[in-house]
Image (tube, rainbow, N blue to C red):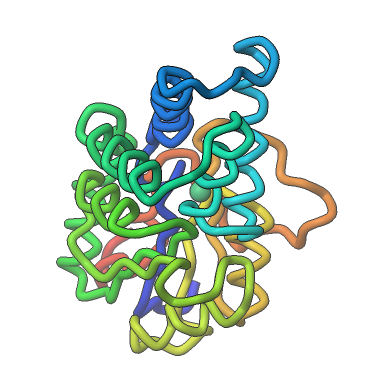
Length: 233
Ligand SMILES: [Mg+2]
């Protein structure tokens, strides 16, 4: 691989897992809304399925996380108020320390890449300050570009172009590292970047997406393929 001068990282399932943190925050919100006289929407299984569906839409960019909270509260027969949004955010942020776990070797690999002088940034779909705090919890100290703030979501090429400007690195000398074939690999390719697929769960790469330039199963494999020191094998 041509010498790489900049690397962008996906956050969730690439640098860290969050153990369904936002789902748990919605479960707590459900508890609060029911205590407030709200009505249930089916069985608990139905409720959990509805939370997952709501989060799927929110992550796809159909609406903001604050709107997701308002929709959820309203669905349970309670008039949504700002305090519901504030409570959800506070709950979710409070869960980070307990639920966010960096993937193995992430911290040491990031440190080693930084020592090689490679520019690094995180590009992630989500909301702040949640994503920045998750990135810090994962051991990433650099710039964190979050869709709610840059106004565009992966896989849009504009998101990756914002990343390239932050990295100060040409597309052909930059790579993006992520676990999502559509959002990460296809998105990076559309912006002219190399794509490294993180496949620690040993999944099958979908046939309808152009394959990644490289695949790693463990995060520290990056050290062997990106900006290895001169003379290294
Ligand atoms: Mg991901």
